[in-house]
Length: 151
Image 1 (cartoon, rainbow, N blue to C red):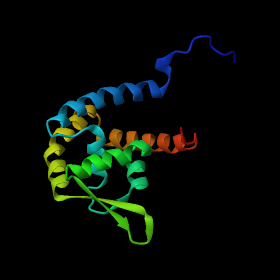
Image 2: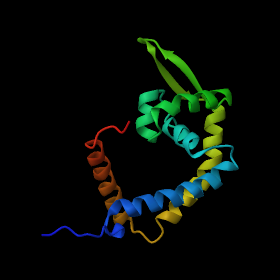
Image 3: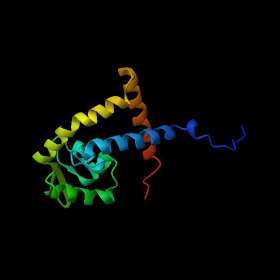
Image 4: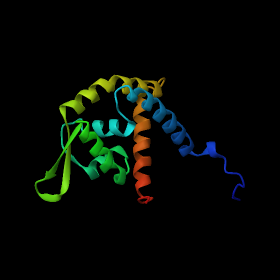
């Protein structure tokens, strides 16, 4: 089969993912701003919401935040009293990050706005379609790991 000379962007799933991500990012930015949060801060708070302290690497994996910027973000969040950092007892180099009460309160306050945006994005999807979408996206994410780390 001869290769097409034209790259028809709408034929590729990442076109849609990029479009949704850009629009959702803008909507989340507007909603979170009134809570004094950025998208990245929200993702960190959500990653820590279980109450279990996490390493910076674990937070980076959960939030898709660039590890090199995450340290600065966590320092800012610590200054604001949203998170606390402590050395991991077993490894002097490792740092554990946990949610503070102020961070939990901010997370809880912002959650309805975030939930409303998620609900809008999934409007008209049945529960089965939502589950199928998550299954496919998880597989896509796993496949993307095979592409290697972008530096």
